[in-house]
Length: 250
Image 1: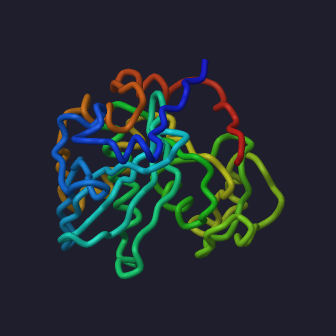
Image 2: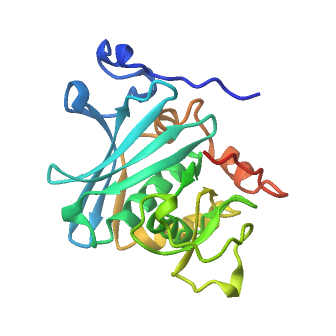
């Protein structure tokens, strides 16, 4: 049975004092609409990046913004949807002054690392930006079966602006695709088949520095999902045999 979305409408947010119950225990910084709760810190490659979450005023579902800052300046953010057993990426943005420095891969790897620590499943909603799809595929994520189209890697931000390679749909075309140049768009992405594969891919990005997680696995799971998670449940979900169910494209 599908879980009813737990939304926070504008009136609920205006009347919010302190931390929402699912963020209790995490260190809070800022006030009012600028409030956010710290999850992790990355130190490496000449950067000190702070990962924190803030509330996203979506009236239909519980969503968060995973904000990354450096010395108080906003580097970028990810829009995340809290799901029953995982965290779903809805979008990602790196601010103009910080582009071209590898921050998108750090954001994606940091989010995946937080999900691994919390014992929940990282996945996405429909991704239309080729560069985001490329970053996901480099971490081992793959499109849901029979979902999406293939496109060249460009700066396109909308599906209609993508340079589609052909009308082919379905699983990854293998040797027919030029690695690093052709990706899936208009698709939902799921993580690799095993936790170990994702851990190796994430470590390859974050091992260039240190990634300090703030909070317990239980606190992270409460913050990023509707019901919390566990490593055993995460392993079971990611290693589930058989084809992945096809998602409905928005």
